[in-house]
Image 1 (tube, helix red, strand yellow):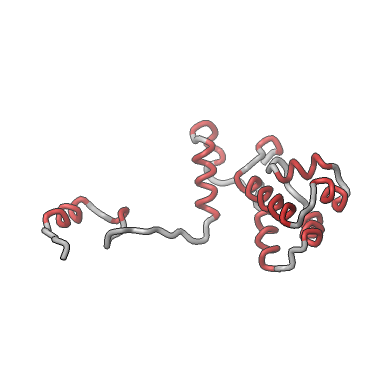
Image 2: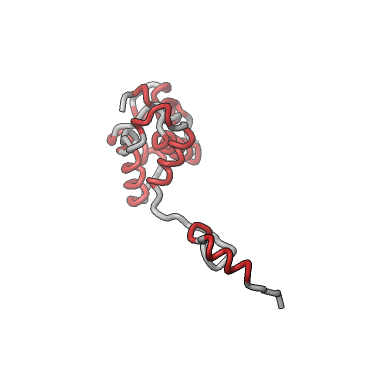
Length: 142
């Protein structure tokens, strides 16, 4: 994926997470730029999802903001590696709205999807025959 194709949903999620960590640590963009030996625009571009971050810079960033949880670090590293990942719908161009592409990216990246159904049978599984039977049954609350 070319730099011009940024920001992607993944790069925006990564940038938002890095910004959250920086703010929780009470650091300014300049503090991070100094630690990573780069300019403030680069940090702003990373946080806005317009640019990726190198693995070495990410490790330095984690040390700077005090992230010790190795599992969390690995999850963020995985996200950082996947910001340029091309999904099957990337080639559809104007056929798909950007909001739909973002939603599809979130769905693909999901590890768990929870639903709540106020009925016995989940809505997606309800057929016409099932609903006719439900409506034909007379149920009265006690």
